[in-house]
Every structure is written in C-alpha cells, then in structure tokens.
Length: 290
Image 1 (cartoon, rainbow, N blue to C red):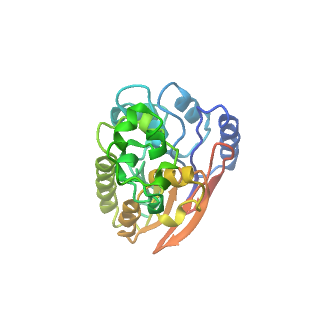
Image 2 (cartoon, helix red, strand yellow):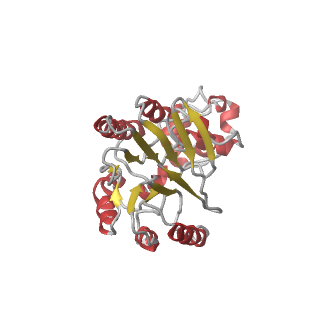
Image 3 (cartoon, rainbow, N blue to C red):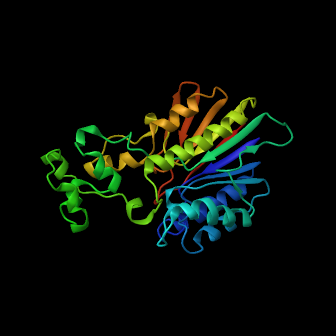
C-alpha cells in the first residue's frame, strides 16, 4: 500500500496557496492508494478548506487530520467546530475524518491501519531558560507583550517571578486570538489522548499502525534553537505526552506530523518519526510504501 502524506497547505493564505496548488497537482500525478493530510489545510472560516480538498483528484482513500488552524475562527466556539462542523464538511467532500474513524487497509484485513489526531500542546516543550511563568503561556503572550497591551497587564501585577530576560521576549501565539476551546489546553489534550489511546487499543492486533498527529509528538522533531520569539513558540509545537502514548504501542511503527514548518526525522524507540516540514514558502510530501 502506497501512502502519500502532506501537511500545512494553509490554503487560505495568499502566499501559500499557489505553492499548495503546485504540490496538490504533483500528488495528483503521483498516484497511490491512500492520501493523507496532516493538519493546517485551511482555516475553518470561509470556504478555503472546501476549495483545498476539492482540488485533489485521487481515486484512493482520502484521510483528513485537522490542525490548529482548522480551529481558527472569528466565531465563538472552536470546540463545536472541531466536534461537529468540520467533520461534517470534510465527510461531505468524500474524505475520512481520521480523528474519529481510523483507517484499516482493505485487501489485507488487519495488516495496516492509520490513526489520526490533531494532537495539541501542554507547554512541555517550553524553553525553561526563557524564565517565562506558565500563566503567560496559558494566555499565549510573552511578558514583553503583556507589558505593551493593557488587556494582559494583570499578568505582570506583583510579578516577582518575571525576570529581565523574560521581559525582553516579545511574542504571542495567535491561537490565543482565534482558537476558542472553552476549556484549557491541558483539558483538551487529555480528551484527545484518551480518544487516541482507545483507538490504538482497538488496533492492538494490527501488525503495522501509522499515526498521523498534526502537533509534534517527540522532542527530537523540534526545530533547532532560534531567536527568543521562535523559542517562545516552541511551547505550542506539541507535547511529550503524545509521544509517550505512541511509544506504549509496539505496533506503531511510523509517526507523521507537521506544524513546525521545518522537516525533521528521528528514530525514537521503535518508532520512525517524520515531521513533513511544509511551510508557507515551501511545500513537500512524503511517500510511504507500507
């Protein structure tokens, strides 16, 4: 079975769309048995998601995993989008909502399965040397931004735990503006991991499982050190807990992720892990023969 996988097409973004069209056309020509999108195909608002998915001309099974950008909305409730609206829209275009419906390859029943999850973050990849207290990560702004924006100034009131180095960090994570989960990041991740565990347990007898998770599951797939803004953003790239869960299952042989926009490969325990690495200015896809 040949699997084609890409991520981070960002089809709603004017700079990204022409490159996405090009990589989609390449994937259409490449053929294969299963097509997989590992998150951030487009934001929820508008119809760019439909435009993106409809451009694929693929005769095999089409699998969809959401990313954090699919949860971006100017509406009041990203969680409702994620649990109700997005699955309906994706299925209406002939794609499988992999978050809730793992794929088991036909023809060789039980030989290969693919599971998917948006994953999420719990700040376990935060850089401790920045000295930024957790409450700033929860609000998705750095101390330097809190000092500049009145709506976050309360985070600094009586803040003896914020040193000069942390105040020099001026960055924010836009999920804080556009993702409305109506619950904490940790609670959301707890829910997602419980769902993923249940699916993996049901597939325990399948010899080969591929896990597609938008957020980064292993520290080994993180980008190298960068400036303070980039280092602040690492808190939102994924979670160690995702990787620990996947390593509990010896039949999980391949893990694919995206989100960081930089390619990386690593072998972690028995798992071959790949960060696909598409970004706004470049696109790529992976081919796996399973």
